[in-house]
Image (cartoon, rainbow, N blue to C red; front, side, top):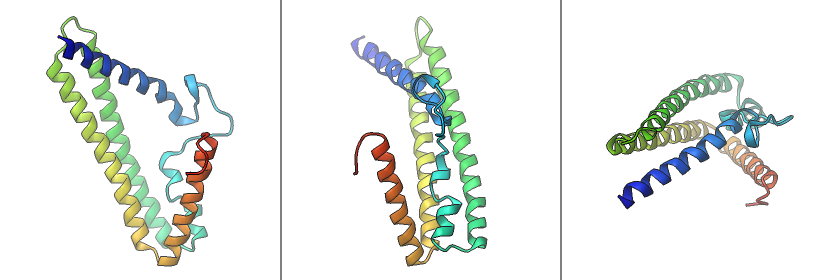
Length: 161
């Protein structure tokens, strides 16, 4: 009984944390409040067109990358939709007097698998793009990505890492 109670508490805490962070993805801050001048563009921050142009990547190659990035974003969006459905299902199950623990664990496992697939898809996209570039282009892009990461960490209050 203690294990079930602990599992339920962990699941509820995770759901609460996810729900609080859900509004932050589309230019929203804490509590879902709009943040002026800032928007989180997800994959647009990864190998965007301007970054590739600055590195000297040809227009044809940039067009191919944009097309592939669009496909990857659609797939990741589908994964996120399925994850949201699983979380809604789990929340409904948790409201029952006697929740089905097997269903909750199954949903948690499926969610983890979908998150892993999304991360691998994005990582493989980045690897595919970077390996198609010349060493000079790749070096410029990697340096610029490090600069962006440091800027982001500094804005978040974590200093240079």
